[in-house]
Image (cartoon, rainbow, N blue to C red; front, top):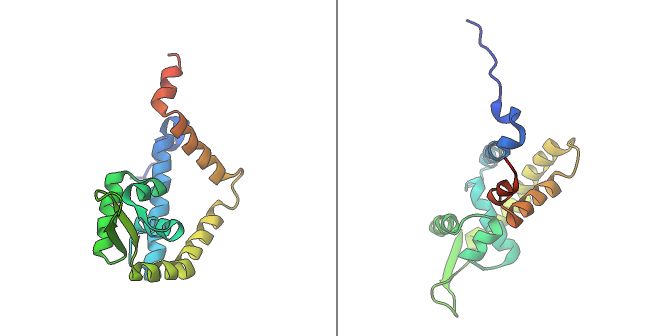
Length: 165
């Protein structure tokens, strides 16, 4: 029995399934990034590094600020921070001005890991994604930023309400 080619309906529906398609691309990029990291002996999951990178770039942050800086929900950020504290990559302390807030910073091990990642891991991943996107027409990162800004300004449900049936 001959295998038949099945249409990729997510691709063929265009804008209707853009979110699904972007998620699919994101998951593939994340899996491929993890493969590179595994080959280089990086000890964390790909999705955990943006937390370390945010603190490295911005300095100590509250969990809420870290959620905002990484675009993750506050509960998701709380879970990731707890895991990274457990793994010894982050330290937390109570805020001096508000005992309900925790300030998150890189531990000594977290600083070492970020330095290694900046030197050995992140440039390889950046180069690979740049190679992937190199022949594309148009400024992809600017277009993605415009989509993110557009969604922040007016979510799809508000936009759909303006469309006449």
